[in-house]
Image (tube, rainbow, N blue to C red):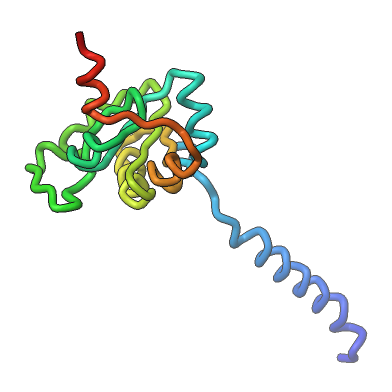
Length: 155
């Protein structure tokens, strides 16, 4: 065998290897996967309506400040809370509608990421995790309400 007879198959093998490395390593998204969205995108979703806003922080955090219209279901015990397992998202998942988009948030985005995975694993197909959480929302200058604000509005 001479050098020229190995050039063509070697070049094909090299091209195949390059194509495999480029296309074989791309992450494939499933239709039921959740999507991370910015606070700007989240605000747009809320303004359009037809979205279930899910706050997965503790009751104390929620009472301190939350997005207007948010529904509070904690994903886990955090910040010193001592909730029963039946008060957490896994036990209350049926309260989250499957027919709407679900926008999930927490303080900084870590718990909402876990909650989004729980929802995804339960068959929810329109789950959006607000990256940066309520901290980024507030940093962007967007409004929040507290439970005290809502009590003051009551007649």
